Image 1 (cartoon, rainbow, N blue to C red):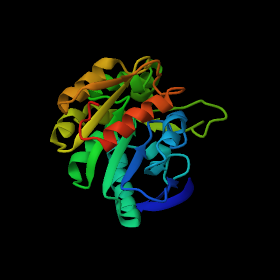
Image 2: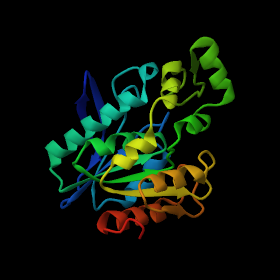
Image 3: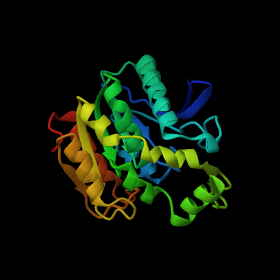
Image 4: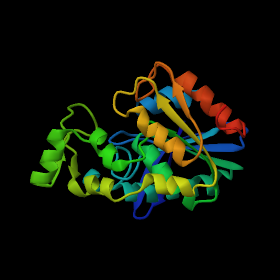
Length: 250
């Protein structure tokens, strides 16, 4: 994959694109929080989707891209999604654009997709519909305590790009304001909801709620964990079928 960059407001976002010789479909991959575009999920699944044009990028404030991590908001990431779609549509002119969101990236995909008629299909993997419940998966009790008492918490992950990065309470507060399921019900295209059988963070009830909102069924990937390590090929197979076929339940 070759490096690319594009603007989202005042920030330059950076990522990578895979350009096959021939393609009709472009997939825009949205990473989770506090991950980045070269995380385990992307490395597990995307190498098995090379028949499509693929864009993966870091949201503003994340690793490769401009911006401060502490300024992150889900609503700002949704604006970054629009910038990514604009970049792909203008640069590559695909016949079909598919949004593929993992974890918090699935939240971003669901919140944005209905606003953009260029998006024909979305893939939600490891996502959450009820963010009031989902906040429990995103933050530990210790982190929530720090958010309320100090207004922030700091990641301590030596050797990781996010070490010493600060999360402010306003990022947490948006979990109680944004309505993922309402947005998803407005989307007129096709949706694939994927659940990892052994997801250690997000229980299946969340996938069930997402599927119900878009009137489809959940595709469960056996033996998969939240990041779909070691099950990338099996997961990609279901994604290929969904993209190439009209029936998202296949």
